[in-house]
Image (cartoon, rainbow, N blue to C red):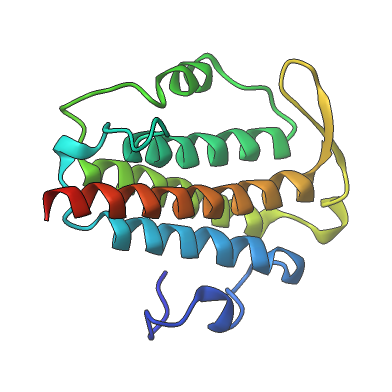
Length: 173
């Protein structure tokens, strides 16, 4: 769902149809993350996907992690518990795998963003302050807290990914 002008950030391209007004910033942030992930990893060599820069997380980890966190936050926002598959994904987020394609990781995040936006369309603004819990410790949150965390968390990791991509690509240039 890119705007006509890909140079404009999503928050400057107007409201996203069918998304409640209060969730527009979260939707814009997720779409911006999706666009930047594709942009920053275009032509990124898969051989560097699991390389670490200064002991920090790999590009592959960041790509898996933003998908996993978004998936988990949506689950909690719906009032559900994590599934065995979600726990397995969490355990594997940083796993080194030479078979993994960069485009595959981008697509996995794009699919999760599309799922999130479809979910946003179903949310009543009145339900956004409903209490939700997170994790085994059942830490307190709300529907809106979880959705905004998912959005800002993805933006934070995109920034970290950009730095890692830049450093790794500068070493091969």
